[in-house]
Length: 396
Image (cartoon, rainbow, N blue to C red; front, side, top):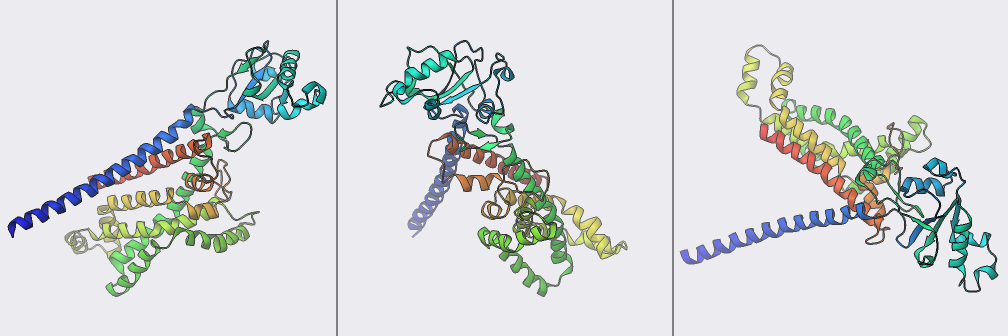
């Protein structure tokens, strides 16, 4: 009998070990995959791989950034002098525009003379800026290929324009997305923390057991509602209300996202804060009351200071809950990738961007890698908040 018991115990230990090992390896594999795909963007060009930027060989410009390319295509920059080159107007040439300069006979019935015509045009015009396919570039032509900066970490993190599908130059500046995420989260915590703290104090120190036993399951039930339901509620009720109250063109704003996230973070904040308040030793409360302090003075001067680390942990976990939320925020914030300056304007968050664009990004493309890089940023933010919680717990 003992022999069978030892065997069953060893089997149970083996199952537990295997389960924990597989889980750990799976999590590490996901993290490694996230970083491998995300970091690939910093070895990519913002232009299509099969195209090159070509200029006249006498042009002194040797390198251009993605922002310069965008400004040239948008004709915000029209002279090479602006980029440090000669005082010469920029002549933009693409394949679709070559017909404006040459007849069909000169290009050939099957465009067999197209490469030669491009070569002639580039040599004859010192201000030309040609965006052409590599298929038309051979070693016999006299022109200069301008290398385009690869996407750098600094450019990625501090860039203020997120246009991943723009053609021919995509822009991957994630600063508006980072600030939009933090902006909405800050508003959510500013709303949820005082409400959650007051509710937790009431449940822990004021409410009777009967009412508390009714209220607590109701609050915990909020955490079980799917986020899309919150988003639908926000879209149907909250967004029109904000639009009408503040007389805005649209109601999808950072404020709508903050209110929805505050509601979603409340169960976490209330539950953890109440547990922290209940850990206050009865002897401390009785000592305070025995010294003549009222119940509210005891709560303010004894219970809250004693539970401050737990309250802090609740706030940080609430922030973590808000930072990672996707669907509800996607539905009510308007998804405008601009740097926020007010709670009454649309914003876009990192999770909403990943959810909205990942299905459209071709596998392995620069856009695909950029979304994984956003995932890395989100992972780091969440990791920092979780680490703060562990530090706070360690000090308790």
